Image 1 (cartoon, rainbow, N blue to C red):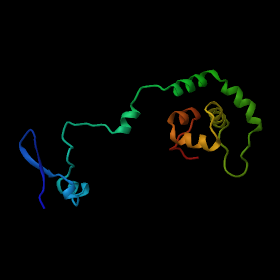
Image 2: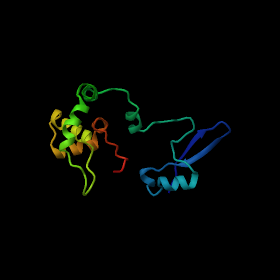
Image 3: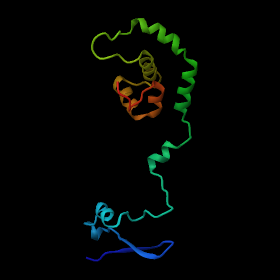
Image 4: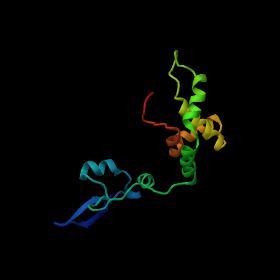
Length: 143
């Protein structure tokens, strides 16, 4: 089986890099390449390519949804609403501890503002980081 080689110039010398996996040479996998040569084809010094997700996380564009929710955080009297609802909320004396009243209120408002069902808001809270931030939910935190 014929192996393809890539050549690249380094500061000290020109050396043969690693065989390139082609459709004709599918048995040569990335794990094999890493084990044999310590790196993967295309990873050259000085090249810092960001992944697609990293690029979106670094984005500074504020969406209309985010602007709306930030305005609602400033406009809605959350403390007064929490004080009104707290006497009627479960005390959590038995069973699992209840969610904070503020979180439940914000989730309820999300449902009303964006016409979401119970299942819809649950999915949206998993999928949309802006919704999680508004509701005060940290996916990494344990209850």
